Image 1 (cartoon, rainbow, N blue to C red):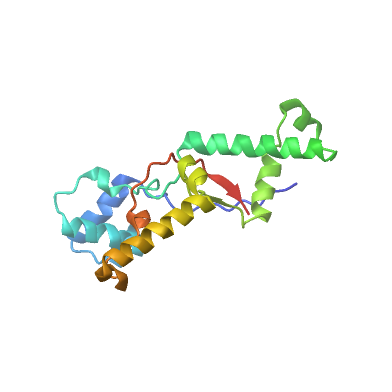
Image 2: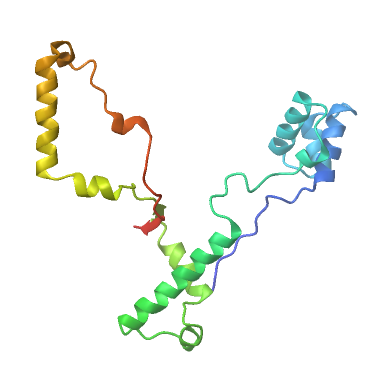
Length: 190
């Protein structure tokens, strides 16, 4: 199985190069395009850092480095664990369905990296979602008897206080965002 790899072009500019390019624009009066062409940096990237430096001239050299982890969802350890568990699950499913697999799968008791790469490439619709949490007390309390009590109490309050009957003073406290439930683990779904 051959794999298709494409060389990434982001992250090729060092902090010193970016700082030198910004200095060319701000101190030596180069245009942004000329400085970008001279130091082989993309124009848009240099423009972003020049704007950042103009807004805050006291910015440090560390801020001239790109931050690729800003939108990262999982830590490196969590990504490794997810990868391992998916490979183990693929092996278990193949064994249960009597599918012939490579000998290396039997040795390591998991699918290989190449299989994982091709699987994720073919199945782009797999996503991670978090199910909505529901407390045990809520699950056990939602029964016909308790629902009947709720509506009986609501009816008696509406009879006693007619000003509430128009519905402007009835609030759903369930939507307040206050929770007493534990968080559930994310599940993988298609």
